[in-house]
Amino acid sequence: MTRRAPFAAVFGAVLIALLFGCSAVSKTPSVPPKHPEELAAGRVDCLECHENVSTGALKPYATVRHSRVFIDAHGTYARQGQNLCSSCHAPAFCQTCHAGKEELKPNVKMGDRPDRMAPHRGDYIATHRIDGRIDPGSCFRCHGNKNDAVCRQCHK
Amino acid sequence: MGSSGNARLPAIVAISLLLPLLLVGTARAADVSLSSRTYLRFYERDAGGEKNRFIPAYEYLSGDATNLGGKPIAFHFYGWGRVDLAEESGSGKTAGEVGSAYLEYLHPQGNAQMKLGRFFLTEGAAMETLDGGFVKVTTPIGLGISAFGGAPVEYSILDNTKGGDSLYGGRIFFARSGFVELGASYLKEEGPFQGEDRELYGGDLWLRVAGPVELTGQAVYNRSVREMASQRYAVRIVPGATFDISAGYESYTYKGLFQTTLNPAFVFPSADNNDKVRTFFGIVDWAFVPGWTLEVAAKNIRHDKADPGDANRGEVGLRYTYNGKKDVAGLSAGIVSADQEKNEYQEYRGFATYSPSKFRLALDALTQQYKRAIDGKKNAYQVVASAGYRLLDALQVSGDLTYTQSPNFQKDYAGLIRASLELGTSTGGKK
Image (cartoon, rainbow over all chains, first blue to last red; front, side, top):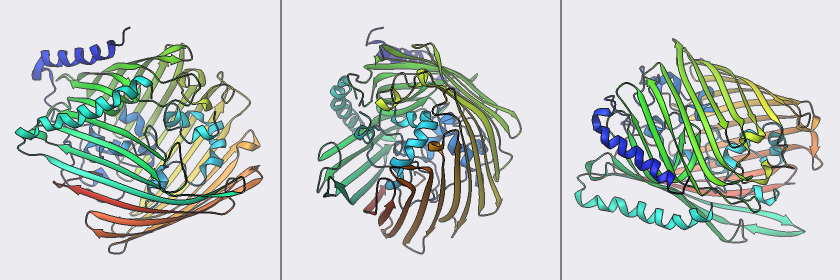
């Protein structure tokens, strides 16, 4: 496969979309790009206002209720689409943790928000030796090919 | 990032920044928001008997311009930079990164969308930062397709291995609102990953079986090494706004998952390429009384290899939300038991926030107790105290003081000053 292949794939998909035109697009209203109401600080519960199915994720709002269960599995849902996420979260929100060359731990940046779930609290340099042995896959997601400036100090 | 990615970055940023300007002339309206986070850290480190002082200043800037030209077109930007005001704190006295800079078109119907520039993407088997394009369309019968391609944004610390040169793929899916979403995806990254490209086949499922019961599944097969990379299956019951329970199974193989790593921590001899991990897990989130939430989680982690061996992790936590939901206090405990003593520890944490008027106070305390000493110490402690004040509706300043005692730090004090500025031309929620 040549280096042009990825671009050909994208443009091919765009072409198909244009050929089919709007008639090929679902008539379901898209999720708004921005939540129309102000959101309170802290963990927001969608179910306080929404009862039905999200037009963005095509899933019940109960599914995306930000409980501990959802937060642990948020990647599973995000891999089926980011539209609903980006209605309430700025694109930069994901990259608070899923960054490329990050130097500050999320909990350092959010020291004033201990209520937020943030990885690597405490002196994680010590504890990561254990977590890294028993479940290295959890490290790999963020440090496999990025976010490794700190790793470099010891892992050479 | 690969060298090709480095070469493309200025062009990507320039094009992404200039394209929105083309729409300015016809702009009937545009909603613009800007977020700035400035951090000034203070800490000292001993190195060979010499005490070094570090004062790195960080700026995190994100901007979003939506409704460009009165059309559903948006431009998003996110990046950060560091300047050291004292000793060098990282690789060089300055550092920085453009995390994202892209144009986005969101069609008013069917969640059809396009992205062009640098963006973070999660789609099927892909969880990437990409310099390139993405398009996604759903048809009236629920069938949909997405495609992406470009240059991956990666960073390598693995000797003689740079990141991939190009990455492309896509996903086909079927979604029926409120009932099911089923997807199949493909990803190929051309690069020198242990002598092979990266080629993944993925499958994903969300299925509402009945009422509040749903199943999720996600599996990725690594064709390059002919091995399952990862799998995760879960059943979840969400009967309402106060109770959420999930249990499931996940697994991954080192060979399949770590093949494309650019970090020596994930290759031999740091990691045994023949190991496999299987995990059974369960999580409960129960708001048993208004304001009070109980969280319980457990994991049974099994390795094929005796070293590191198996482990169990259990957690229980209690959260109390008060002061009009502006504040939270919590207690939690976590215990890891394992085949090997060196993998066992306990963790206890307590935190509370208090936000009277324009003030914001927070306290967070954490201790970890290791079964076997790490560098001669069995305990670690950290306390973070934070105080802030909202000077303006858009401007908040705060300061943190952190005390740490651990295997790496005898008695460490670190300070941080934070300024958060939020500006916007429209109302509505963005967090």
